[in-house]
Image 1 (cartoon, rainbow, N blue to C red):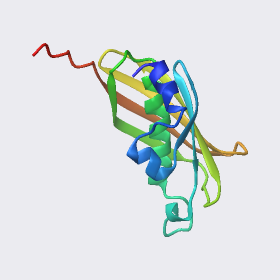
Image 2: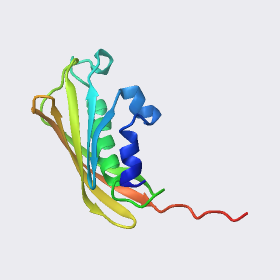
Image 3: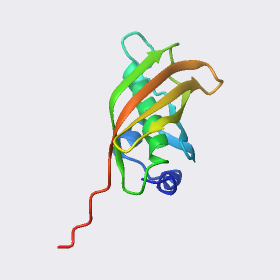
Length: 142
């Protein structure tokens, strides 16, 4: 996927997972994206705060989409290692934004980071992720 293809997502195209969570892309530039998610009541865990897995999905989306902005057309990237450090709790009704940034983009692997904040700038989580990079499949002539 290229920067242009990622920017097409800004027009509303998304995956089933991002639609389920309500993740929207707000910005896409080379090596960085900004995604947003409104925290719903059904994201709350037994402790009464937003489940860490939901926050992780937001961070993963930010990192994966930022990586896509620097990859050749039709390249696929899949996270294989992800570390998220939760800094503060998120509540239902809050809007979270995650800024993804590429740290390294190689031919076979890549490393990205994300910073997750509330709309007023309170830090909720920081994440790093390692990604496997799959080159485009060759076109079949058959």
